Image 1 (cartoon, rainbow, N blue to C red):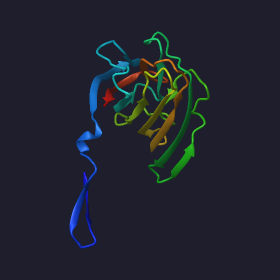
Image 2 (spheres, rainbow, N blue to C red; image 1 turned 90 degrees about the vertical axis):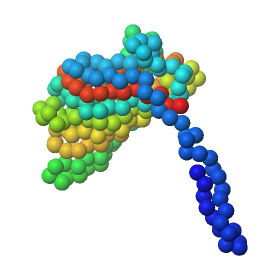
Image 3 (cartoon, rainbow, N blue to C red; image 1 turned 180 degrees about the horizontal axis):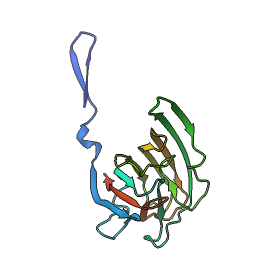
Image 4 (spheres, rainbow, N blue to C red; image 1 turned 135 degrees about the vertical axis):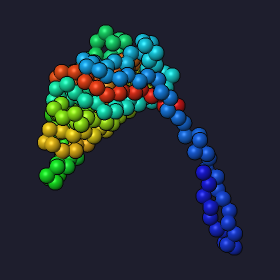
Length: 206
């Protein structure tokens, strides 16, 4: 990219800051299509999944996730390749909402955060409907350097969905996994029932 500017004689010159092609790229590692799935798991070294020091950033994307029962979409992580999903987490959560009757809201969600909790972390601040075929969620979970054995593991999630108000609700969840052990597996589920349909993709970021 270059910026064009005028010198003191009105002559144009260009300053080069580098090519946009050097910004890196996303590499698709694994796509899982849920179909009445109680859980969807990504375990390093299993079913072509890479979740190690090959990449320092990983991105999970969610496309048209639909539940079998009205419930929360959630995740947990493992440091023993999926034998236990119980990594300690401290998190924060807030949402913006616009209901179909034009009422709006913006608030912190105390029901979606954890303080040194080992249980599942909600990725949405309200329940996702199951009754309507068009109710679904889309968004992402960005995980930073999960293989580090020096630092805790930060993550950020942003998801939009239709909640049971009904409303469009945008949930922002972030936090850290309070472990210096390498995180090598991530599992997604619903708080009730199963993941009826939808795609979850895992990308490595160069």
